[in-house]
Image 1: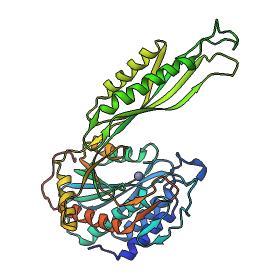
Image 2 (image 1 turned 30 degrees about the horizontal axis):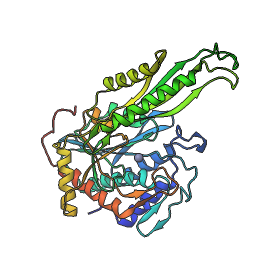
Image 3 (image 1 turned 60 degrees about the vertical axis):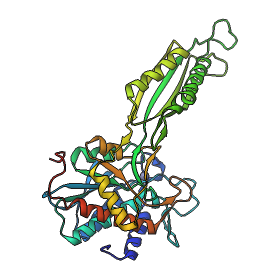
Length: 389
Ligand SMILES: [Zn+2]
């Protein structure tokens, strides 16, 4: 049973969509950040007897932390991000949510203000029931769409025995996804006047050999490295830069590469494998690695998976489908902090696209799954593991 009428949940979701919270690092020209939506969330939660506050990660970049219950039992964390991608090219009004049947339109409707609303209603529900043995905490984090400074900051301040994310997943249970690694490759040429074929050597031509070598690695090696639920490893060349003028042999060329990684892979070996391909293609070259996010995988025997499965089954009469995702989410950050994590969220389409909507009926089902899971998980009087405290 939801503690507030369905019409009020819909109003809450529409209100959240009406507050622009476009990630300022991603789309600075839109001039938004997460402060206004965080203020609204805090105020709404307090009105529903949930303790809530903002925690600033950087000036203008807040998370919302909220809690229900006390330390007399396990702690369950629910996480959703409060930022969205930009609105360029959108074919609908991004911030005036239209409702058609069960579809609610708007930027962030699906990714993921629906997930934010589900968390808020779950916390309000548990506060109204007043009978939980442990503690429910909410991580409503900023910046997921850019560098995840919100989730990084959250796990540095708070501990939990398990975490559920609500990224839209069509009510499927996401238990694994890939990570990624970014690097820059540089080749060097010999600068010379464009007429001096006898002196000049183009760094761009050398880079062509690197690009061919990496493409071969991707298609013939990585594609065969398959993993259950999430498919193969992969990589691509995403940026290229080189040369100083049309009449000069290019002295330098760089490419940026992205390697998508599998939970079973070793990142040092991944780096070495690429460095060897680059070296084989061009001796006089270098590879600099500058950013990495780990893959995510949750053991199917984890208690949180059992609780989500049982709640889903009792509400929908069947087991949830376990799936893996090719892309990255904040789940990794919680899992890496020692918190067993799983994702289950609403249905919808158009994430990061010109027409985005969420299926409101699935938001209600998602919320009921969360309420039931939180209730059963927090019935366990004994602590689960010793991660917390
Ligand atoms: Zn998202």
